[in-house]
Amino acid sequence: TAKEAWEILKEEFQGSDRIRVIRLLNLRRDLANLKMKKSENVNDFVFGVMKIVNKMKIYGEKFEDKEIVEKVLISLIEKFHPKIAAIEESKDLSKLTVSELLGSLEA
Image (cartoon, rainbow, N blue to C red; front, side, top):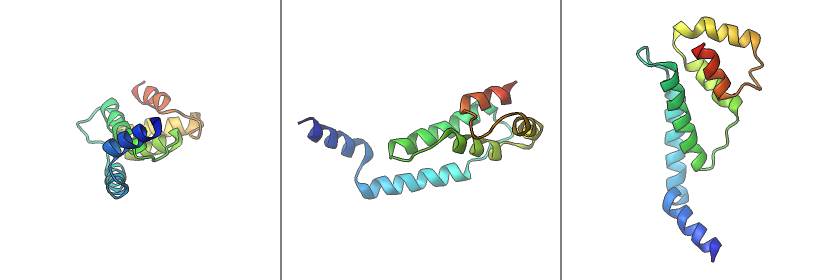
């Protein structure tokens, strides 16, 4: 049946519950420890954040743009602090999308 086929695919790509929990914990740690490097451009950094977030979504983690925006803002290097201040003053962070944030940071 379709349900059985789905379960087989789910097991194949996500692994057992135990493996899924371990992978998700590792991804959470990776995301928590992620900081922008001085040699990194903002686009590459945001791409790296989204790569981890998308892997976490595969394992069932739920994210709102607000959480990702906050992670990016607190992880940027010092040279972005003036832009961060301007964004915080002029935008509603609870409604800001990741792509809007990236556009503001690249401007």
